[in-house]
Structures are given as C-alpha cells and as structure tokens.
Image (cartoon, rainbow, N blue to C red; front, side):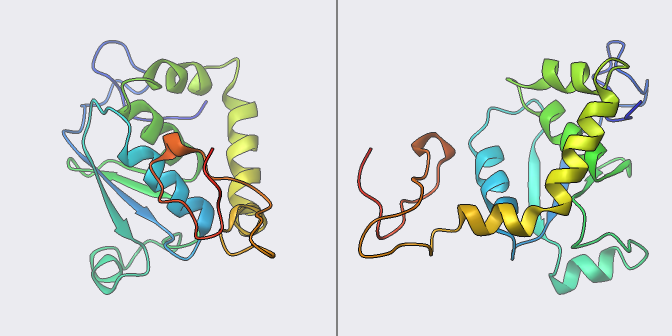
Length: 161
C-alpha cells in the first residue's frame, strides 16, 4: 500500500501531520509546470512551497536524494519525505478538494493501480509534456487549448474559449 501523510484522524500512516510541504519539481518539464500551476490554484489544508529541483539550493539541501529532478519529491516541515507516486498522493492529500481521493487511491483497493498510473505518467512525462507544450502552434492554430481553470496564462496562439 502507498504510504502518504496522515490527516491525524485515522490516516494511512498514523504519522504526525506536517504543517507545510515543500514540493521539488522539474522546472524543465511542461507537465510538472502545469501540475505546479494547478496545485497553486487549489484550496489547501496544508500550504505548499514549490522549489525547482535543479536549483543550486535544492541540491545543497538534498545532496543525498538521487531522485531529485527525476522524480517528484515532497518533504514535510517535520522531515517526512515522499518520492514518486507517494509524493503525488501527498500533494492530493494537501488539497481540500482531493484529500478524500488521496485516501481512496492509497487504500488497498486502488494503491497498486494508482502506483502503476503515477509511475507510467512520470516515466513518460517528457512525451506528455511535449503533447502539452504551448510551442506547438502552426499558422495561429494550436493542437490543444489550455484549460482556463488551470490558472495558466494563455499561449500566444490560443484563441479564447
């Protein structure tokens, strides 16, 4: 079963609840940037700070983390650490809207599927990011449109919804 932060009321790990989370993400990945933008507009139970994993201070703070920049890493102010799929679920857990889903996805019925899903997305984030890239315009038309609820600025070639 995936382990992630407890909500203090019978959550899966029984661990103390962090007061804040630091999310280390890959700033060169379009999917990672979009996930960050989405999280930044969510109502949160636990505040999140976002740090580019390739930043010098991130490497100085976390020299023993070989996953830094290749996997999502979330660290609580209490030192609790989540990597990969567990980090994704911890981010969902911090949101007011999706905390319930984080518990369901970490439970015995869905944990194996959730782990495979997040691992597949993470392993293919370059391809997913390329598909989502805003630099794919041809003659003023885009292959996709940015969802305005994501809080992202529209690309130069996008037409209004």
